[in-house]
Length: 175
Length: 175
DNA sequence: GTGAATACGTCAGTGTTGTTGACATAAATT
DNA sequence: AATTTATGTCAACAACACTGACGTATTCAC
Image (cartoon, rainbow over all chains, first blue to last red; front, side, top):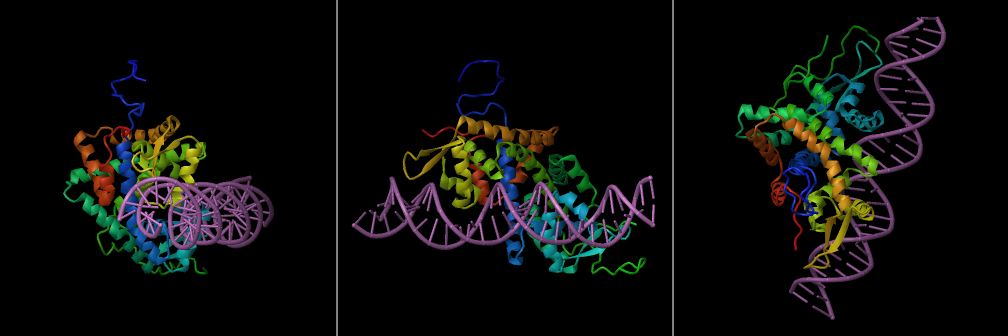
């Protein structure tokens, strides 16, 4: 179908050419980058007998110590039944402790133990190294461009949740 | 659970910064960015009765039409049993056709059908839009910084596989 | 104070996507 | 002719998500 209809200036000489301008290249780069990015902790996790779901939980409990179960569910966007199975293993293993909410005793604040902090650190280390490698030689301005890109790729509510964490430090208790 | 004023002695010290310089911030940004990035096609896929695995296959068969099963396995880094289940559904559904390899008739070249190309396009469209939004207002130089970052986040062999794709357009049939 | 709503936990079943292991077949290689 | 290679397939299993239903403790609203 090589008619000269009112199509824009897209060169479409092959029959396989897509009808629209789609950024397959970056889509693919994101796929590979993320897969390799997660492969580092995945390898470590099997040594602990854990999976990727454990990593996410330990990460967020470390980043936002004292967060409630409901807050964690909102961050992960999974059901409480999915969370329960994995969270229980982390509690039983002594990586996370639950503390009754000070204001609302129905709530369970989740806190990392020393063991939990070490696990989170262990899992994050190779990822942080990979990021450092990828960022090596970039200026602060360029790093900002990259971070802005990541933020702009998110949905607004994810953006708000990232922004809600005090910059790079472990969270401070409120009240 | 009896005292109401005494703050329990948590086995943690939340004011402590991590022992090492870990980039928790970007790690978290990557998690959210990727999750939201994949949520777009995930929603569409359920309407087709497909899953994320179908997306990956359709994407790569479209990007590299005529690739063999072995090549696809190498790209996805999954087992042939995992691939088979999903690939069969795409073939049965008329999204992908198999062609005996011209040089080696044991091989099965995978080609998208028109239906398959439309599926790949449909799934990629919201992702491409999201990328375009995130890239809006960035200079060509800045875009290059972002792409370079993504490439540098990959393992070397992933990098080679991305680079091995002809152009930004869907590949040309080998004849 | 009583009843409804909320926060959380749990039991039971299901689906997708990954895994290992074993075996079959056709075609290429030696 | 024997072996290796490319692919397919059967069977079992695990991780991690889902829905639906139900239980308990606590808080809120009237």
